[in-house]
Amino acid sequence: MVKKFIAILMATGLLISAAACAGEAATDNTDAAGTTKGAEQSSQNEGTDAGAAELEGAVIVDGSGTVYPLMAHIAEKYMTEVQPNVSVQVGRAGSSAGFKKFIPGETDFSDASRAIKDEEIAQLEEQGLKMGEDVMEIKLALDGLTMVINKDNDWAAEMTQDEVVKMYLSGSYNAEDKVKWSDIRSEWPAEEIAFYGPNENHGTYEFFYEKILDEQDMVKTVNLQQEYSTLVDLVANDKNAIAFFGFGYYVSNTDKLTAVKVDFGSGPVEPTLETIGEDLPYAGFTRPVFTYVNLKYAREKAQVLDFAKYVVEKGASELAGANGFAPLPADQYAAYLAELEKIG
Image (cartoon, rainbow, N blue to C red; front, side, top):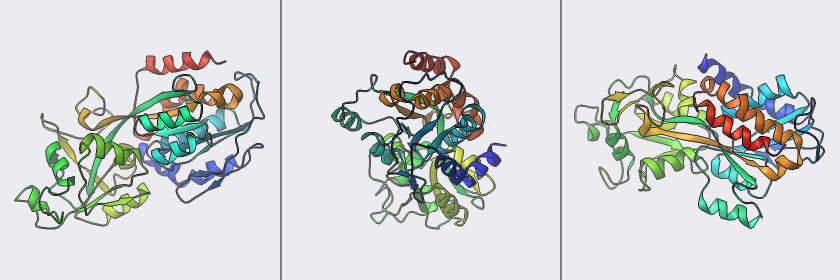
């Protein structure tokens, strides 16, 4: 069911953008990556009550491609079941690219598969926005970074954490970084590994580089891509390929890919919704994913505040699992809702 739903979401992402264009107070142009360009912030509903029965206007979201399936699903449910006259536009430019739009005020929400950085917080302050007062960080759910291989690869289905790290580090085996499977384990094929991953626009890349590789140089032969669908196809068509991305993109493509079971020291662990968690067996590759809300816009525009409340009250908790994320405890979502209720 998870695989089927996410596949449908990816196929119908343009429909969400099309619905967004019906909004009276905003227009957008969407590029091939699903990003929102030049969208105008709507102030039509300034001063209205966020709890009103019917709202209008646009809500603009951009950022993480990893978070995109979850946020797009939340937006679809909100527009269909709660506020049909609100158009929620969801982009997937990548975490870093999303913040570049959020900081100058081009978007209402910025999804991210890593926490906002100090330099980005400083840039917000230059715009007169303070974290906590004008910008709210919302942890949406937990994701498991997943190493994926080709379905015909029957030798590397289990690897240790150290093997995963070492194979992706530049200079681990030779100066040219032309690494063979047999370099990792002598009994594996003497075939060169094709390394893949998301590019620097994505928080997944930053998490892998900063947390998994400890900010050491990545193997020179790695092929980094903007689109996760491209990564899926590259690995699916190459027996010697390996890539990393969020668990949700794996579960939507289990017919094409195999997830590597990672041994963190107590035996191989398969990434699943039952193992992904900060205190669970897959903790070594677990990370939180976020959305950031411009609270100034939430105070000015009723639809922005209302959508934020929906995200934390129902959206994330009810839809995380269906999109390959482990939901947070209910009290964490309740705490976010309490903070938003103070606004109105």
